[in-house]
Each structure stands twice: as C-alpha cells, then as structure tokens.
Length: 447
Ligand code: ADP
Ligand code: MG
Image 1: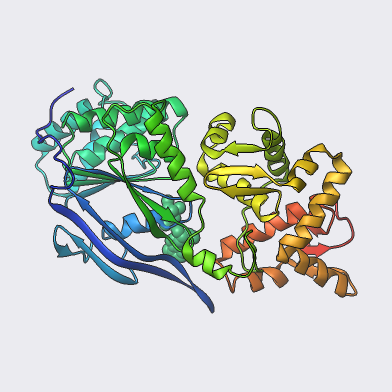
Image 2: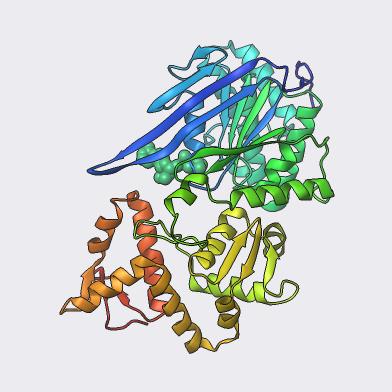
C-alpha cells in the first residue's frame, strides 16, 4: 500500500473547525396537510482530526443532515458554515461514501476512481497517479483493470472509498457505508479504515459517519451524536476516549454500548410532555406512526424474553446480540410490545408485563383473544377501525377512509405502513379483515 501524505490526527479539541451548524431545521411540505418536520434545531461542529458519528434510527433525518452539510440541500432555516463560510452550494473539500456505491459498470476500477478527479479538472497523468495511490491504499491493488461486476460487494465498496479519497477531501462523509455488507466483510472494512486513519495514512482531516449501528459507532468514533426521531434532534453527545484498536469485549466498551441503548430508548422531554396525563406507560393517539411488524416477530420476541436465560427480563444489547438483530430491527418490535403493554422498557432493559408472561403460556386461540383485547385497548386506531366497521351498515370501509385521516399527522409512507401494521395485527386478533383487491376493511373474514 502506498503512503499518502497526511499529518497524524490531532486531538479533536484543538483542530480547526470544518463544520459549524446551528439551529438547522428542515421541513418538507406534505400537500394540504401539516408539514413534516424532519430536523429541528440541530446544531453540531466538526473539527479537524476527529471521527464523528451520527447515530439514529432510520427515518430520523441523518441522510438529510448529511446532504445539508455537503451543500446539496438548503435547509428550511438555520446556519451551516464550512470552514467559517456560509454554505451556499456544494462545497469543495468534501466527499461522500454511500451505502452502496453507484459504480459505472462500463468503467474499470481505475477509471471509476479517476472519475472524481476528471470532474475537478486534474490533468490525466496526475489523475492516474493519484487514482493508483488511492486504490493501493484501500487494498485494491491488482484490481485496477477489473470491472465492477467482477468484484464482491466488499471490493465494490472499497472502490467507493477510493473514489471518495482520491480527491483528498478535508471531510469524508459516510452514509451507512457498511450496512449493505455481510457481517464479516463489514468488520474487515471498518478495521482497515480505522487502522489507516489511526496511522495517519488517509488523505483526509475528518470523518463524519452516519450509522444506525450502536457498536459500529462505538468502535470507530471519537464522538457520537445521538439523534432522536420525529423530528431529528441531537439528543445527546458522547465522547469515546478508548484507545484503538478497540475491542467489543472490553467491559468499558460494553458499558458505553449499554449506556447508548438506554439513551436511545428514552423518550425525549418533548415526547414526555406531549404524553403527560397518560400515566407512566406511553399512550398514543390516532396519529402515532406504527411500525409494520409481523405478529410472528411480536410473539417470537415475547417467547425469547420469557425463556431462559432471560426469564422475563433482558438487557437490550444482550438481547440484540443473542438474536443477531440490529437496533433498527429490534427497537420497533420492543416498542410495539411496550405500546401494547406486553412489555416495559426502562434504562435499556426490557421486561415482560404480567400480560406478556401470560401470552406466552396460552394456546393459539387464547393468544389471539388476548392480543385483540390489548390491540383495542391500547391502539386507538385499531379501535377506530373496528368502530367504523361496526357502525356502517355494509361493515366495510375503504383504506383511504383511514389513510387520509392519518396523513394529517404523518407522511404518506408512514400512514401506509401504519395501516399495513393494523391490517396484519387486526387479522391476527380477528378484529377485522382486509380485502387487497377492493382495498376495503371488512368484518367478513377477520382471519
Ligand atoms: P435517515 O437517513 O435517518 O433514515 P432521512 O434523512 O433519509 O432519514 O429521512 C428523514 C425523513 O424525511 C423521512 O421521513 C423521509 O421520508 C423524509 N424525507 C427525506 N427526504 C425527503 C424529501 N425530499 N421530501 C419529503 N420527505 C423527505
Ligand atoms: Mg439514511
């Protein structure tokens, strides 16, 4: 691997400011309904010499924020500065690595990496030299003349990194760059990248990385900004001082992961305020977006929780590791259990309620009845659908009857997902049925 000139990373509290963002707000208009607030009052700084992680669940506005920082999207309001100057369009000195890199299939690896330099007018000989350097650095030597289709996913992502690095950006923005790769490939790529960074061999000053993977953030970052959802806000900031290479098994590493799980499952003060008077357990109005989770996953998780070694109570990071699930998969199921009062969530621990324990011991029909009972009691939208169907002489109501109402509170795709969840849950609990052809809810075949 060739060495690219670069000073070793400096402590991040000393480096010059690259990004200064304050009060960033991003709102998308949703036709005649209320607007969708994606980011609200987001402030952050990035200095030279640091790896910063933006950790949040999917849909919390992370990609939107990256696009705003890179100057591709102008925020609705707020101030973004790049090296002390207001960002007005795409800034020089930034490059982006995406989840899956769109390589040109008709170009070789070398040509794919050179593309970025061509765009900024670097002469041909210089382009070639720098592209070969970046390719060597990222561990692709020998593959210069290969075409993308000849490469594995991990190799293709390395080309993506080489393309971002070849322009010697000050800041490399990465949007979930490891999440499309298999577990082992992702880990190899992460460690290779961090090794290069620590050795001061990357031709960049800083990294801003978006991820929904808690351990990945703790493994790689000097500082993690925890993003809350709906709207996206920086809910907490954590500095990770552990030396590299970091071990996932180190008790301090585990404690940090634990702490972050706790913070990510905590409700924001605004949310708590909005739900005051609903008791200690979170309640919901019609307008709460629901994740489309299968009833198999819901009952499967209750069974896993009830069984040893958990016997009703589990530490979330532990549970995630046992079930090999990521935050984005596990949290929505846990929250659904919480919403339906089958489990409680407190400081990163999930505990089955009495009803949750009972559910696990029941036979199929009794499970369905208990599920239906809780669905009606704790998910107002389920009660609404059932009531409308009961009241109408036809006992039918179109999908749009409810989706239009939901779109007063959420975007179209969230409304669609929410109703899809209700269709699945309603069928399981035999509360109502749904006909895909006529797009109508009904009481005819609630199975
Ligand atoms: P993340 O990267 O954290 O998953 P995104 O930034 O991609 O989140 O999206 C945040 C929210 O903003 C989502 O609800 C998404 O549907 C919405 N959104 C993103 N871009 C647009 C757009 N151009 N118009 C309308 N809504 C958008
Ligand atoms: Mg994203």
